[in-house]
Structures are given as structure tokens and as C-alpha cells.
Length: 325
Image (cartoon, rainbow, N blue to C red; front, side):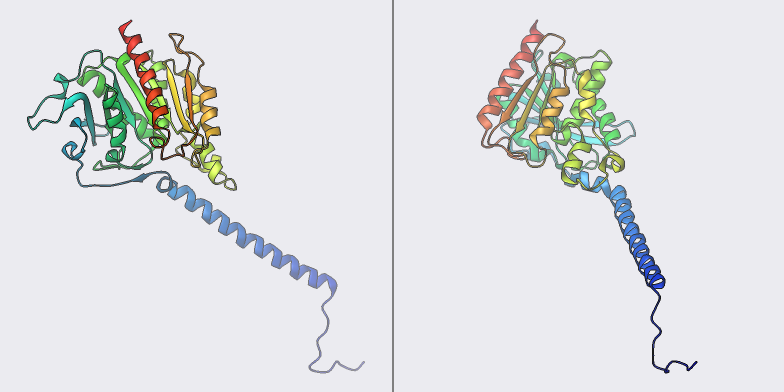
């Protein structure tokens, strides 16, 4: 039989071509899988840098707050030895150059609001909250989270919960404020810390005066899943802030504020949190929800400010009334 010409090519059999195609497909699948796994590992490793966005400063003295009411620097020592800085605003008191112990200015029976801020910036970004509470005639205190402002440390849900309890102890034991006079105000991610603290206290049969949640979610898992629907957020997320689970144990009065145009935490997630809460407080006060028709996530104290102020005034009056009785 004559040999084929030197430059001719023997056609591959159908089975050989199919095997090569299968091998190429398999190699492509393995390469794609490696890329996906690498991205998931990076997401899991760096997730806290995606959740927490602190603004760092060397110092943040209360004297620079530019608030009309008296504002004092306060500090607490965390469970692991960190010094956490905050501000205490005393309503009805103007700024004074003289050093004054804020404990002498806190009026017995007046409400103290403890603010738990959102995930970005530092406490100076929440001056509008302190101003609003001062104008409503109640005192307010805010501490930056660890890793925020001038505070050392790194943010995490577990440490936030422990630090919140430290702040509570400072308010009740050092400042001498009665538990029923204290209202928690949780903004966005801070709602997770506020709900968790209220829940832990109520489970310990220590009931605060009230809980206000603004623009917050039922869980960080749900919020993450909303923004990253193709990722297995439920499997990857370490800090989960399962507020809808914790709020079931909250027995104090609850007020929810949420913008209907919120694109960061959709109002549907706020609704799930509201639905998970007990319908009545231990004193048979119905929980209240105020939806803000013109507000997005970061402008709640903007177009719907009159609605917000009216809701806060009514809620704080209710808290003061239950303390008096």
C-alpha cells in the first residue's frame, strides 16, 4: 500500500475530536471554578472592610462639636482594655468655658438617648441627631465604635455587642441614669447593635425605656443578599446582625423610622424587622412604624424632618410618661 504524501494530514477520528473538546471544556470549568473560589475567599477575607467604613481622626474633642447645647467628652474602658471615646450632650445647658461635671447637669427623670451610629464616618457626622434630641429637651450620648474616630481596635459584631453593654453600664452606674429613662437609637447598621442590646437586657429582665430603629434591616445577611444576589452571602458572612431574631425578646416600646425611597436598606427589609417585633410592649404600648415618603437612606433628617420630629416627640413623651408612673 502506498504511503501518504509527506505533507498530508490524517483526519482525526470523531472519538478523538470529541475527547479533545471534552478535555477543553473540563479545563475551562476547572479554571472558572478556581477563579470563583478565589473571589469567594477574597470576599470572605475582606468582608469587614466592605461592611465597616470608619473615618479616622487623631482626636475629636466635644469643644469642636459646634452644637448649641453643652457637649462633654466621655470615655469608657472596653472589656479588652481599649479606651472608647464619645460625647454626652446635655439639653438645656449652653456651652461654658468652666469645667463642669456633666453628672451634676443630668436632671433626674429626664430621658437619655444612646445613639448607635451607622457603618460610616464618626460621631461628628451625627451632630444633627444630638441637636434634634437637645431641641426636644432630652439628653443624648454617642460613642464611636472601636476602629472609628480616635478609637483603637477593629470593628466586629461580637465586640460591638460587648462595647454596647459597657456603654449601658456607664450610663446606668457611672452617670446614675435609671434604665427606664434610657432610649436606644439605632441608625442603619447601628440598629443591629441597638436591637441586640435591648434584647440582651430584656432577657436579663432589665427593661430600657424604649428602642428607636432608623433605616435598619432585619438582618445583614438579607441586606447583603439584596445587593449581591448571585453570591452565597448566607454562607460567607461572619457578622450577621440577626435583628429580626433578637427583636422578638424586646419588651420595651419600639419606634421604627424608615424612608420609603431607601435604596441601601429597602423598606421591605425594615418591614420584616417590624413584623418580627412583639406587637405590644410589657406595658401594652403598641409598637409604632413611621414610613417617610420622601426619604432615601441618608436623608431621613431632610425632606421628611417634620414627620421625624413629630414621631420622636410623641415617642419620647410616652417614655417619660411611663417613667413618671
